[in-house]
Length: 263
Image 1 (cartoon, rainbow, N blue to C red):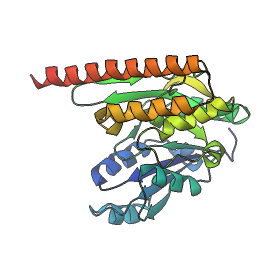
Image 2 (cartoon, rainbow, N blue to C red):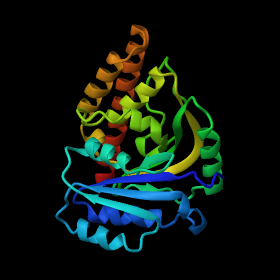
Image 3 (tube, helix red, strand yellow):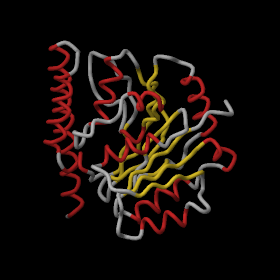
Image 4 (tube, helix red, strand yellow):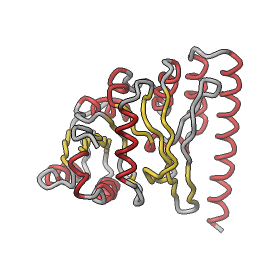
C-alpha cells in the first residue's frame, strides 16, 4: 500500500448530534494500523443542539485526524463542496450523520483496490455495496457496472469512494435538491470515465431520507439530468423509463412493508 494514499471521509451535519455520535462510533472501528490513512472532515451548518461543542471537544482526541468546520451553508451540496476543499486525500467518500461504515470492511482488500484504481486514468471512483435499514426492512444495494447505454447510479452515494480530483473538477450542483450525486455519475460517463465495481460492503444507512420521502422530486431531477446529457434519445428514454420503474417498485415495496409492520 502506498504510504501517501489517504481517504478523506466527509460528514455534513445539522442538528443531529445523536446521528453524528453513531457515525463517529462506526469510524472508531477502523483498525489502528489503518487510521493514519484516513482523515475525517465534519462540516456543520451551525447546529444549535450541542453538536458544535461536542465536535470541538472531540477534535482533541479523535479516532482519526479530524477537521471540524462550523458555519452557515446554502444546503447539503454546498456543505459537501465545502468539505471537498479541506481534503488532503487522493480519495474521498461521504458518510453523513447517522450513516455508518460497515462492520465487515476488509481493509486489506480496500487499500489494494484503492491503490490499483488510483493508477488507472479512466476511473472516477469505486462502487461498493450498501446496507439499507429501517424499522421495517433491511436489504442490500449491490454495486453495479455503469455504461452509457443505461444511465443510473453504480450504488447508493455513501457506497462510492471517489477520486478526489474528479469531484474537485466537477463540484456538486448546488441548484439540485436530491440528485447532484447522480449528476456527478452522468458527468463521469459523458467523459468516458467509469466506476470500478467491488462486491463488498462499505456503508450502512437508514431509509427515510429526502429521496425516499419525495419520490416525485427524485424523478423530476434525475430524468431532467438524463435529458440534458449527451447520450442518444433512445438511451434517454430507456434510462428514464427504468428509473421510473425502479422508483415505483421501491415505493410500493417500502410503503407496503411499513404498512405490514404497523399491523
